[in-house]
Length: 208
Image: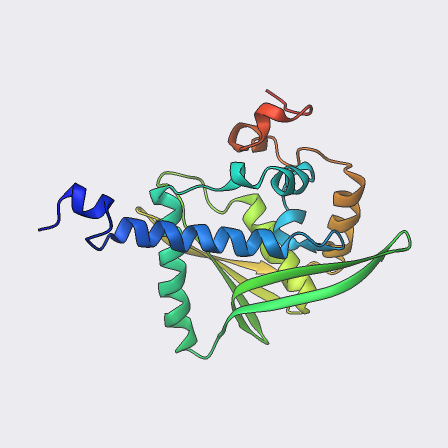
């Protein structure tokens, strides 16, 4: 049996260390993708427009290694494998260029599972919550608009529920969200955001 001393000096395998390195590498990859000022991700459009700037300026503050986040990532991998066997394309990238006041902006997204007739997004979370969350539904509607797909499935797997919600496409949604994001007409986007934001202690628009 490996002791703590064995793990600390590298003589034993550590699953915690392996998971940590995986999460850290994924975070670094996402940060590198976000550095282009003319590329904005759908996940940026459905949250406070100030977050992206803070995240690029202080990337270390956005890194978390919490069990609930790791569990969610691992569950995504398992569900993705299951749906791949059902004929879905996994982690499909979407993108479209928009002209906003003469500025060419590329909006990108990566959906969990894709078919030409259906997009599926997986979500995890703590038990006892009211579902679905508005920001999750907005994210899926934005993916549908970006992909030109009419129907989506928002699926939650939590400790107390496995439930799915049908979501329809809203044409022109991404362009409206993009203009709102670039003009910062709503910051924060949701009433609860500041309380869960890693950057709230440094933000002049914090609402609590």
